[in-house]
Length: 326
Image 1 (cartoon, rainbow, N blue to C red):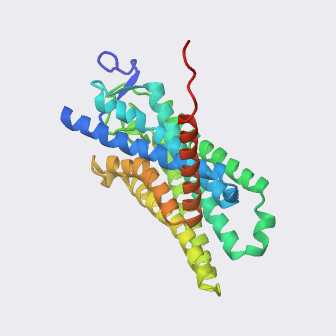
Image 2: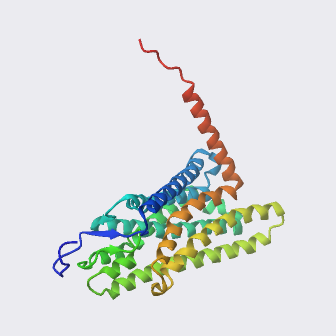
Image 3: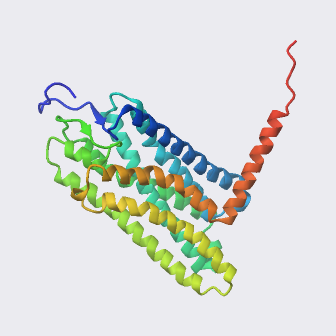
């Protein structure tokens, strides 16, 4: 920010205050979040590898799950690397363009996650409630089209609010009391009131969250009714296990984003948005692979196969004879 902050001057960078604390605690937080970040990448990467390499998982449910794991990797990459850098940085600055790129990708990834969770719920509903038609309706091509639609709709959903907020004048304070560039703090820093931008941002956030959440709840309610009518206890257990893992991820994700983006922001303390954002931006992507792998027998078997192939590859690589240097 240049000079005295008059209306003719504009902000060229923002300061992400993050978690104000001593230098020693900042280093501890850096190490802690680095471990979470690496575990998230490894866990979701393992799911992608299992879906790609195990032929038994080349089904619509696991193809959507592989896309979901891929999404989670990019979701954490949209915010965590910059957060880790800021823990060790003295200035904690992010450029104007970088801030709005982070805002766009962070919200686009979140919107895409809502669409994928809805698609996964619809897939389970159709597979359990209409098993005779599932194979003919949910073909490979339609599953591919469904996945592409989730990606496209997710990245288009929040584009207009980001553009509107980026066009606002920023000429005053440039300190954001958060560890990511969020729409709420940016609207607060604007030099001019922007009720329309705020309304559009809040409306689109609430719509994608509430509509997808209720769609998922209705889908799983119908699944529950269908599962209770299954004659075999083993079939009921398998259906409950698969849908239970999906529903756990849904509740984990939506429980936090509803507090942030649906409930009125005026009731939040300065710490609450950081904790909620931290939870759905870092903790949820970490837990998702654990939930899916621990509660799904097929996924566990596929992960063991991938691990076995990885060990064999290491042994083959290690046993290669080395050429002697003449």
